[in-house]
Image (cartoon, rainbow, N blue to C red; front, side, top):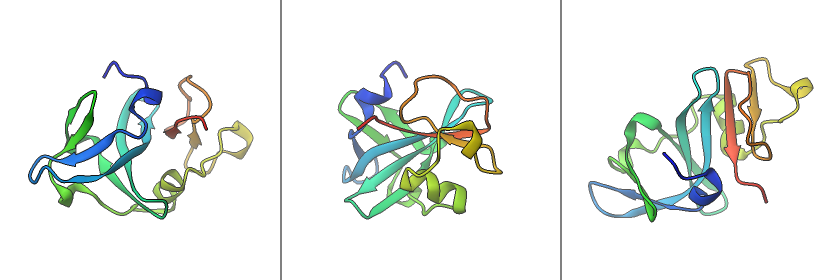
Length: 122
């Protein structure tokens, strides 16, 4: 993926099975120890967001992110993922959760922690 997150933020997420728009890309969840995106967060309006594991992304183009089907959208599996969906992971090291998560919304650097949620700067 050569696009920056800033360019990808807000990109349509489309089901390959039905060609239906499922929402917009709002966050990327990064496994910073392995330095790769592990999931994306798909927003459906202001109050609904879902997680799609990276292995279910079938295309990442300039106009849309393609997922296998709407069935790949899932609710956050735990409190950590819910914080990522809500954009509430703190980027300061002193406020990192016990799971080692940080939000990288304002910093382009890789965190040394296990997982981070990236959201575009406001």
